[in-house]
Image (cartoon, rainbow, N blue to C red; front, side, top):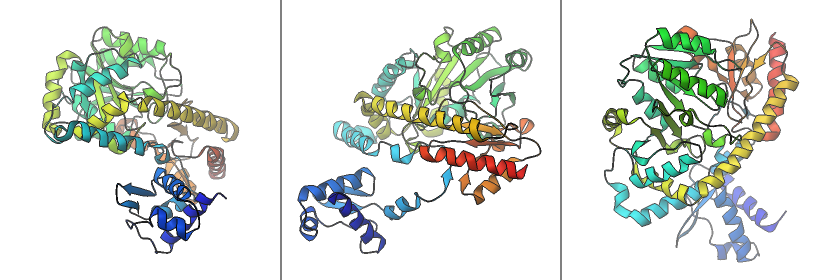
Length: 446
């Protein structure tokens, strides 16, 4: 064991014994080097490693302090025997805390009081300029005037489903299942919604056309890549077909491309790229690739909808927090975002390959599962007579956590035999172990 690792262990032991409490100051570099008979550089290395892992933090001209909440205990408990296929946010260990902290400090230093006063309801213009440049890499070509910065893409969805649209229609169509926050928005606003089932091979386009033709649909909500919860991604051909149907029946499409940055196939384009008519509303979030708590997203809107959308957003929150907008602008401009996304894209692709391999090797033939290419979502449909709650309860006893897809359906379309798995926070070496346990539980219950 290297000397700086011994220092880290010594600090951990002091925290666990209560000698150092949460928030307390660590020994100075000089004091610790003398106490442990090592060089100052070794102590600095140990402190830098602990700061990288968010176990301690530094205060300029003051010293180093233990992060609140006894992080060393959390670190140890995280290495327990639970395998968490339930949590669907980005892996906390991969979140770029220190890089983004630098961006926050820089934006305060650069813009000072501008970051703390009321701002444009549509978002900082300089950020919208940077977002327009960023979107070009995703084949979304637009201008800052059509971009609205939102407090998480969910805010855009919540506002849009209740706004009047130029086609004068009232109902919406959504994939079934879909993510639970969209289901809650539909319930809360008493919007009439018609479902279209998404299978492991996608949707039935003939059924969708019938819905568009006969159900007074003002908009169709779809997640074009890495759909939550199935993980399904539409092909370019399917996206073109959806755009053609929307144009034929005067239907708008909300294309939720919240994880488009993670697509390893750079030849895949969003529906927005196939739509010259302005009928596609493109939304994107930074929550799943950076920090869920950041609550930053964007919507690219048709010009005709911008006034009513901004009026609704002003009523909701006046504007999205300016400080995080400015920090995101610097994070994008610096190239940090591109570097971070490349690492995340590679990691989630590997995890996607591993879970699909484990499905093929371990699950009984009577079980069906979605073929996803990212490490975020996949669904498993259980054979009759199994119910999701039975499998979830038994898996909990095995320290395996998964999610029930039942809450992700509209009431008239609900299924009770589907579970969702996400490997975003599961270590690669534990994926096969977890799926093997899932398979064993299914066999026992059958």
